[in-house]
Image (cartoon, rainbow, N blue to C red):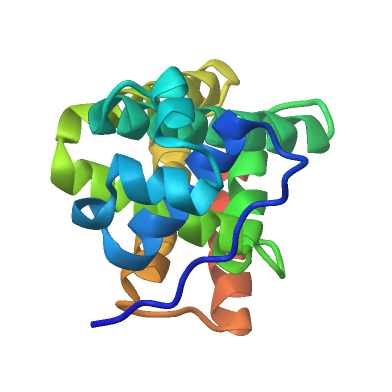
Length: 193
């Protein structure tokens, strides 16, 4: 089966970023088996030697992808927390906003779909590759519980977010605007109890 060539990254991006972007696009389109050093170098517009300067092996490239994904998610979580007014349950409120706002970025932005593809493909290839992202979510859980949110409501909110995100990734079910509003009201109510 022929695949159209991916769009090349702009030359203004540094080589490492172009390589990671190209590898991410390959994994999203065709999975980890299609990711070769040659394909990533070609799609990034760098020589194989240029790629090897940054990533000595396919495993190193996958590790780089997961480290970048973990950094992206960590920054998104922090930005969400900072966007919420200070006060009780700030981390829980940020979690709610992340997946239950009227236009939740985690369900509408293409960057999250690409990240999801990398996440799933890496897990399929080698579950240990997910260690950086596991650390991010463990830190989010710790911050949620340290923010004064009782474990029951806090973990219910976190689990609901994970569930909605996984339903989106796998396309198992979707949520309407009225259902999203009802879920947000219910979960917000847990914080008031």
